[in-house]
Length: 96
Length: 216
Image 1: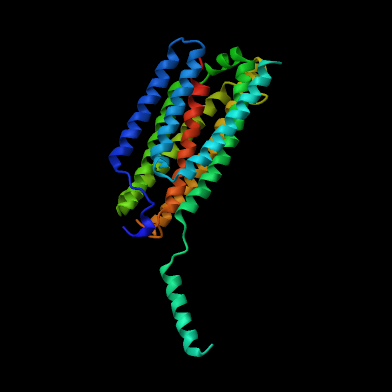
Image 2 (image 1 turned 90 degrees about the horizontal axis):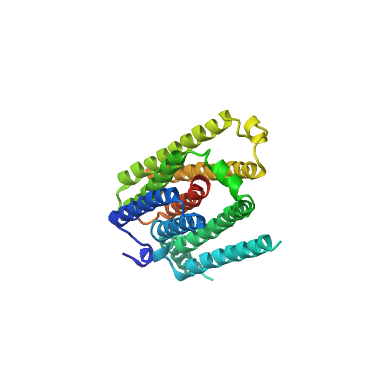
């Protein structure tokens, strides 16, 4: 390996397939859980499972786990901004 | 400057440009990520709209969601997840120098995208047949909450569908570049960036599926 390619990462096929199996299992889980009548918890569960799935896709398929720290800083800033907007909107909606 | 020195300078310059390829893989991925974040906020705005109206019309959203076919939604989720896997594998294959495998995996990705869109076509088609479309006979008689739900459903899954089409265009272009040996085991950033876009489209669907199909 020369200097130019050291920043590139190589994950084996097996890891990707394991991640995919995890994603399929979580999809089955979210469909199953939605069948139970958990009230408000149904929405929270669906959201939690979707967040776990997107973290799996981000970390492994999109290589974020092996990327430089600055990438995670970018994404954190974006997500925190989005959360602030959600909180502000709902604080307005709830107290009208 | 004498001619000899100029010749030496010229030679070293040309050698220089020959050895140093003007490429910045990390910068290129960084640029792609910045673009993906703008996409995230574009869909984020719509998710915010969805959350607000679901908060205002919980019953209308529940009543409208029953119309959606959970089975087709779940199938499309699996199809997109599998196509994400095949893109990730195609990058690994190219890194390992397995060009043929990489090409097959990219063809598989394109096929998955197409199947996803065909499912979507039938899904929308059924809704249209039931009169659920703007100014449609069934939609006119629905409550405000149901109308909001279907408006958001069409806009969000429609915009997502456009992203699937754009992703397929990107994958087709990199596929052609791989076939022509323009992308190789040491130079595959374009494939990587197209893959990032495809994964983003997958992540958006990961959220769309439970929010529209799994409300009970």
